[in-house]
Image (cartoon, rainbow, N blue to C red):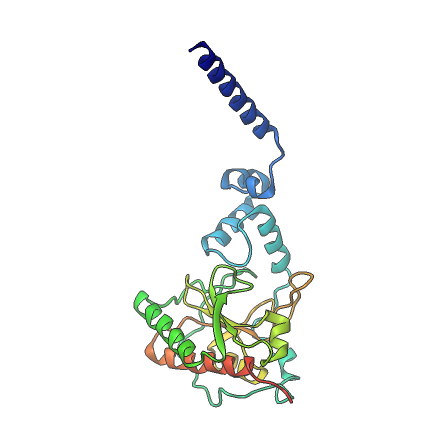
Length: 263
């Protein structure tokens, strides 16, 4: 009994020492980044912005101090999402496809977009749960109809969401591989919006007909090895069955462009 008691005392002493040593270790950025500590680290304006950013949900950056500092840097690089000037030079050139001929104009005003580079999300005009299920079913239908061209994997940039990728990286648009690792597009479960990489002509048509807008970082380097496609386009959350039919055309146009091969 005495030996067991001594062993217990020794164990408690070691556990206490371990706890004290742990408290004295330098904290990593991820450990620092709980809400309580960030409120002390960031300015009042920054902390308010941080909370607004986190409320949108997960995206391509972690909700850490490091992630927030990256966001601040990217926010300074945001471009006008309706500026098509750097797309015009590639319209009708080799590699362009024009699938969305005479696209109908979207009804109503454009949604309000969050003022953050990542994640790129709508703040209003989210579709209903019923419409979201129809949207998912439509995307699954498109996938089932294009099994030789499309596969599903986790989005390279979004990290958390499933995405369409080209099925055969040896027989696809090589520019797409360079800029997105073969990713074609993905759905954002939080708001119903989507991102697709479209051809220059189809990007122009989508934006001019108010179905979407360019990502604010489109065409820009986001790290040493990755540059976002210059036609990375947000498609607004579909509100009606008619919107779903337009979405179908847009998704199929993106798949066609992704699998287009120049001779």
